[in-house]
Image 1 (cartoon, one colour):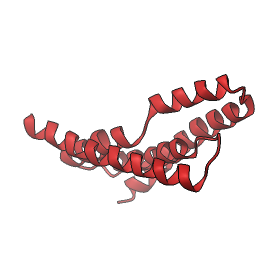
Image 2: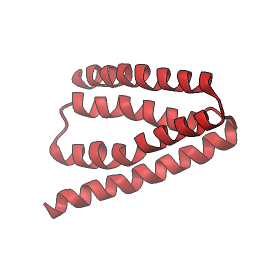
Image 3: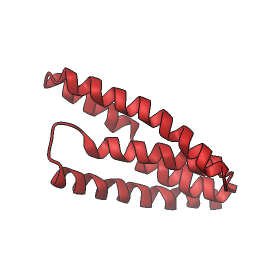
Image 4: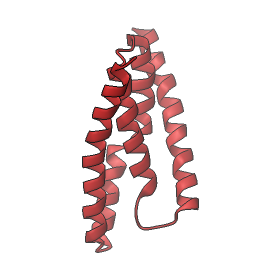
Length: 120
């Protein structure tokens, strides 16, 4: 049990650091009201988590990469907060675009990840 917690913690550490790095890079490279960094990590995370599950990885890898890394790399709470911030700024078209891309592409990418992972 303790070992499982350590795998999740290790994955979470690297996932959080990766998300932070992506956020810094994207904000510097693509300054905009549109939340490109969160969209990127959530879409990539959807595909990768689907891949991990589709590949039927063992429990240790699922804990390390799925629960730990992907749990810290992707961010549902930031996604929601950014939508509220866009609403406060009156950016309704941006909200609709962000929601549509996030949900539609996220589900499609998770499905694609499962399919690709199952080929292994």
